[in-house]
Length: 178
Image (cartoon, rainbow, N blue to C red; front, side, top):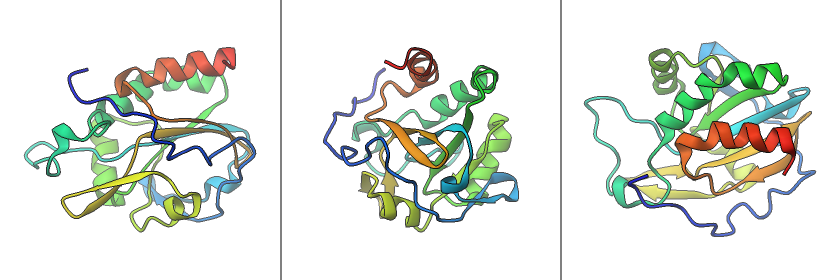
């Protein structure tokens, strides 16, 4: 991976097993409105900073921000392994601070079979005190994954690196419980 790797800065240490997700209704691709606190069964919430678009520059200093790069490859691999998650009865949700219009374009372009949730006003992020960074006037979430069941965190993976290998690492972790 040619970009700087993130380090564990302790920003997710408080996201421990047993933490309830906040009951906040957010917009998702496909016109859905949902609260992750009310999702039954096992699921993962893959939180990513930002996805680019062809012809639009990345935020300032993007190449130097540890852990910033890799959201599109991460989401593509989750798409590629979505059937493997489904076989295990594990739902996938992706979440970022980008608005639903931006996310809808991404979901269509990448043919994502799972909802992408917008926390553009940082209500979910604030309630959970999710780690974040700023660049170019944007407040973005650091990459992490919440492994959940029935609206409660079972495990937090932070930092996530490399992002393009996260789907396979996550499946292995879910299978072994390690």
